[in-house]
Length: 569
Image 1: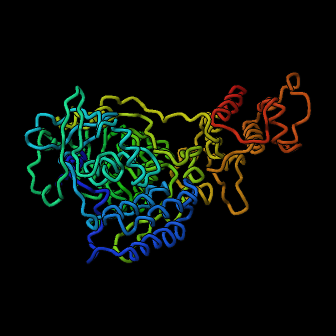
Image 2 (image 1 turned 60 degrees about the horizontal axis):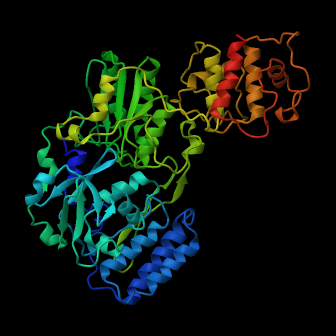
């Protein structure tokens, strides 16, 4: 299978990937009237008119103030500056999926260098031939300012809902001279100073893109000695054994390959897993920027079966994990799998389901979100998390040294650590109904349960780590579900529901209060009064006497309740 360039190779070039999306150029410079029409279209039709909540992060008054500022200079700014103005207006939304991509409609100039981030540091990844010996050296300042401060300034132009995505946007356009000038970081036409750790500095003059393309550039890619087995492949997805114990799957785009439907690919993976004796499956989403989150479902179902057979699932995430791939990563956690690698470029909850648009005169295109995807309410694994970068359970940064030596730091770490991994704890996260049933099931000793072709409840996904618990709870009459056969497993648990589930579990386990130790006093009204199950839970002392029963519970409180039940067995 032909391998594509690694992430570092792709990052090392002097690219403007975050900007160069639009092939069309306006035939003639736009008049002030045409600019006004484009500005009005962007604000009224796209942002205020179509986005589901454009003012969620920034008050509308700030949009209107910036729009008025832009209108005040429509006749005086250059075409490039006007297009950057449009980017700045869209960036106020604070949504990584909503942006203006000015493309070749802007006549950009650039400085001959590029950067790559490894761990918490930035390194010079491309430079003029005479500066080749400076490649791989850490960059500390740009235009006399710390790199992170420059990135913060870039955030006024590049729409991002988390710092990881903003860093990725910056990396892709870190050498655009017009941006430095627009942001007031560099005086117009003056060189950019790139300062390296140790004090050495480069003074780089801006050049046009046509001239830039003719320059000889020394790139860090030329120093890379080899590619790891797990380098990004020129394929939607592929799979192979890495060792006798580890099986590897690379999933690069949330789309179905025409020559290998996902259902067929999943069957091939299942066949391999059955033939081997693998203790761990690595599902790599580090190169996946999204698509349709449901494409992977046949594979997840097969992997769920492998997990039931004792195989551990580890998802790999990183800066490039975005949009639908981000959803798939959280689904891996919902299955009970662990995420390893670096923080993802996508946020747990986010605006998405993008639609494209084109401005009427400049022909500049962009994309805009059409809905808010609240994973916090859809998956137990996301409970309590909001618009924030998805963090791995096991943090392993790719090192520059490993990159140059053709090694995959995260995969090598996982191969060297075969011990069972655990998810990061979120003790203060809201306790969901499904998680509490899972906690009670474990407290009861995780009894054997048969899961047939029909799922326990109509709204069960079929891959949840607590699926056996729900099947057991339904079988024992602990979780009965709603009138329509649903259970709403991801909904936060109330104290009243917790009391009912505890009491029913005690009944199923034939637990009876000791008359000598029976709790005195009536059941608090907030717990539902005199229901038999609630009364039993209260009499057994499974519920705290001094809790505020009007709110919800945390995961840690659920563990405490389950431990109290287990202590009676």
